[in-house]
Length: 159
Image (cartoon, rainbow, N blue to C red; front, top):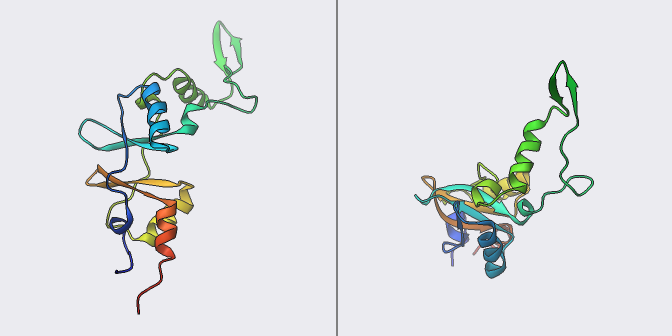
């Protein structure tokens, strides 16, 4: 058997994914049914548009709760603090999410089937992900995990 050299050699081709129109309840059910911590999110055309993780379902800050930023009234208007209001808006949107498209992280970090295993390992380490959607011309075709990559890197070369 030849030593695997690309993501195409090791990826799971029938890997689960979820539609961007799915509900939060469907995501939770899919996590439980598939026993996975994350799912690639695909649109109607089969394109990978994001990733939803178990972490996306938990909205917490340092105190374990979502807080409205502090504000002051100035000359009849409101000035919000801190200046990272966009971060607060994203967190609020996730907290009130009904659809996967509101929860998912985007754009997804992806690799192509032709990506070398070493390059995939580099992406996994640099980005801190344990699984990467595999796309071909933007369309979701499979998944490669950290375990897949580690196993391939530890495959001895044939003599």
